[in-house]
Length: 243
Image 1 (tube, rainbow, N blue to C red):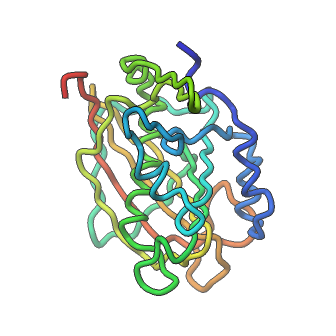
Image 2: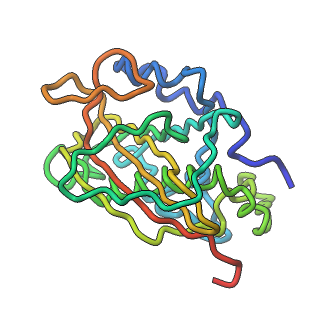
């Protein structure tokens, strides 16, 4: 079994974002607390069809042509509390996520992900938040990966062992705070809040680099503020292979 995709640095994945005009986005690319890794769900898996939505449908020049995953360095990950956190009130103001476990940066194109004109569809935002959360949970549950067989394809790309084979979203609560402009960049910051046995609680927030009134400065970002667009809380389950 090869080393986990979650632990293997992939500097080449930075390339599509190096010329981004946003100073706050560029500052994330080389943040000392984070490593760029391959985004597992962007690797085509024709033998199983797994991740077809994110690796194919949403991987075109008109949808989301580029994705970057930055994980917090292993020695900086927090010890998880073993009691459930308080679920945020629907009307409450979102609190910032400090020191996220994982940052997912997406290059949002148009018109393939548009709902309203020049505006990303809320379903695409939900997908992006869910993807980011899945990797954050996998950082704390690496035992899920080796349960699946490594997919070797002689005539296709090598697919590393899945880092999230037995992890599933049980509940996803999303609060849309402001529209996401398309085209544009989306920065999703996510953190696992607690683990009780096979249960995980996760938060995620999505930002757009934009110097506008009402913008909220995102931790880890320097330069112009990032505007909070989406706030989410989720409950995840780790299951057995019989599901």
